[in-house]
Length: 76
Image (cartoon, rainbow, N blue to C red; front, top):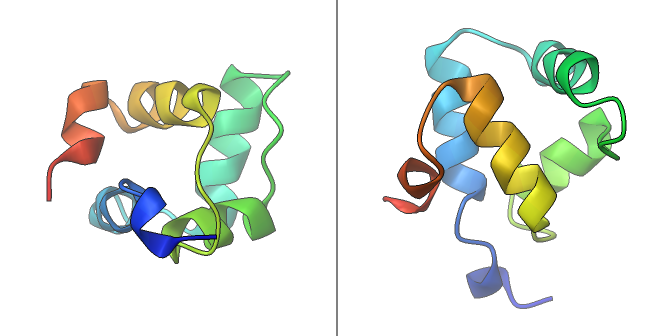
């Protein structure tokens, strides 16, 4: 996987950290709000460290749970 393909990983980690949420806490919030979203702590860790890319569904869910516009996830 080309690490340049993942544009939101670092921003998601930064926003999560600002809220003082662990990866487990963030994943739990995502799972409560989106029961059909396939997300685990391992998947989140891989997205945040740019080892894999987020799907469009992940991007949408991350933005809603973090309380930001989708476009904010793509800003450096």
